[in-house]
Length: 360
Ligand SMILES: *Cc1c(COP(=O)(O)O)cnc(C)c1O
Image (cartoon, rainbow, N blue to C red):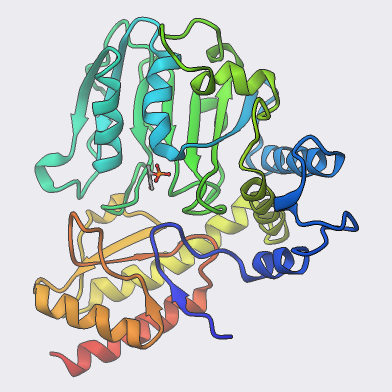
């Protein structure tokens, strides 16, 4: 068996010990004589798995009592519709456009009401986070929406926008559990787990109780109502049972790693190795304004598409895979999520240094 260093933006690298544990439990989960995949979600064994996953997530993030944790399906993209359907009571919301995921969410919301783009960094290819300290927030806005870490462009909100009292809704897909978070600053945060937590197919949302109501837009499907999932412990129907089980293992791994403070320290260290190299390199350049750099997704270019392609190929041959940038932007992108060990980043940088010396 040989494992590569996988820099994929998602689905992405998971901790090896989690994969090993899951493999060991595959044929017989703790004396049940079956795998978790084959188990009734109404069984005692599964109830314990989902309950423990929620309890561990709550303790990791310090989620207050008045917030619900919902395990749902449909990917982060499904939430682009679910958010307005559930939360647009006045049919008005303000969106901050910092990349493709925010833009898609905004376009979806426009189907359900007035969705205003109150700020954007489209003018400079989303290479920065706009100043959000004094935006023209709509008086009757139901919420203000951001994509907190921009997976494609490699920017991150290091300061949350001033929402002028409106509830903040945040897509945290690609920075979920990468650092401590003050949940009380959000009305709702959510993310697809395939970037930093588990297998594709699970979406986790953390929502303040009072935002979960029957008062949703007409025509909102039962499965897209937050109340349906909140009232049924995320088991109104069959949940993505195996995926939630893996998420639970990742939560335990995070606890063993020392929790989110320790994870942030680890992530800062890893990202510094990348950015310090890029800042000193004559061949490679980072594409993002320094103060808005993501700890999770590091895009970079050589400025020459042929050289980029040559690098991606050479890196792949050397066991550093999935470094090609998003199809919409080109260049390279190293996604260095929680589970990427620092050795992976150090070896990548050593490889880049060698490539630079050979290609200057
Ligand atoms: C990947 C990603 C999405 C889309 O996730 P799907 O689960 O494929 O719908 C949305 N937002 C962000 C920030 C992402 O990184």
